[in-house]
Image 1 (cartoon, one colour):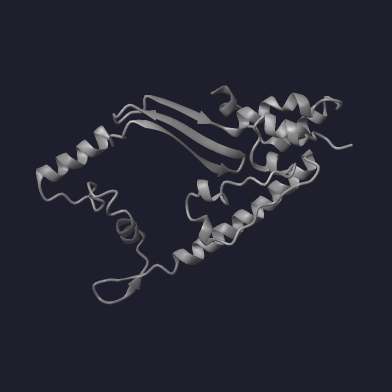
Image 2 (cartoon, one colour):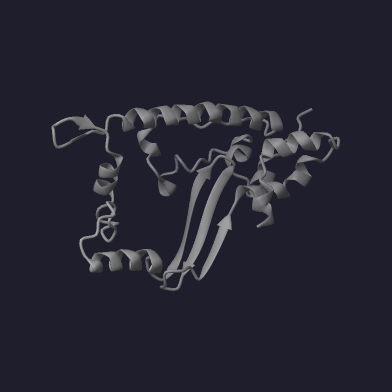
Amino acid sequence: MSVGAINLNDAIGYGVTGPVGRSIGIKKDLRFCKVETYSYYWFLSIQSYLGKKGDSYDRFLIRIREMYESINISFQLLTNLTSVLYKDSVGSDHPNMMNLFQTLNRNQFSKLNLNSKYNSMESLINHFKFYSEGIKVPRGFTYNAVEAPKGEFGTAIVSDGTSTPYRCKIRTPAYHHMQIMSRMAQGHYFADLVTILGSLDIVFGDVDR
């Protein structure tokens, strides 16, 4: 008998994501969604794994494979980082990540002095005001999510035009996965709760919030 198995209707109704949702065969991974693309995953050669039964063993296998996939991602990133070079004053090649950071973010962070060298009091004041006041975000609502190891981790922010959000709602996968435990535990022994809870990988700090 499968321990902690769920069906497709329960998975969709309770809003499960990540390895829990993929264990039942739901092909949803925000790293591959074009409308929710973030970071640089489209430059990497990665895979997402699916299960069939939606039980604890399927979730276990998916998480183990995701660990190997994380090593693969880290290896690809480190390989690309070592190819970033620049010419110093004597013509030698050296990796310079700060130089790369300034090049990629010159327009967005034009007010920052990343070298921390201030030639005048005015530049120091502007630098201090930027950090203390923050960026004034236009009015509106936005929701953005990432594919965290436990599932979809999203943040919904309502802005009133100031540098602090009018309302901020954080969507954590643990809160949704905790609700479906009652369905997973039906027909099982009390000792099976250890396996079910471990396969969900719940963080109780997320649930408390």
